[in-house]
Image (cartoon, rainbow, N blue to C red):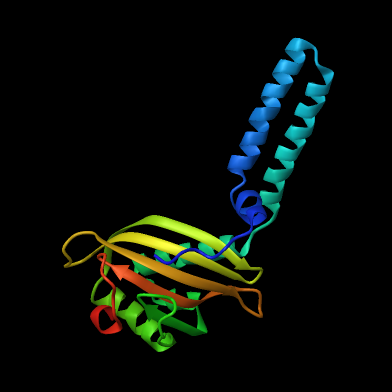
Length: 200
């Protein structure tokens, strides 16, 4: 799996994952309030109140702001569900200019027609019996672009048991404000670097 894109600390630990910071502040606030009341230290009680307010602000910001990474994760969840169900509308998660690459996102890509052929082949020749998403991490690259790292264990009809696969997907906000996949990379299948002629 390629390294994830750089994400600002504010985005990562406030908007996308507020729990470590928010809960840490709340625990410190609780300790400060308890010791302040017990020892009669008013300044410590005031500090506890400020920390509790900051913690609430962190969780409120995370609730109110949906980042590009979070939008991207929602799109990819929908795509996975559609592919597992054999839904013929799964190609609707892709932009018309979407491409698929193999091995690395930097490798040359193939157009939407290959993506549609691959989806149709999975639905008709290799229907999915079960799928477990083992990794789904979203990263905000910009205000209009989210990157998702996806890993699955998938069993197809007539296959040889669960097969691991890894994917990188680029999801972009469109002019109509919808979010669609513009680039998908099949990084590995069964821990081997794939190629278009081997899996499609």
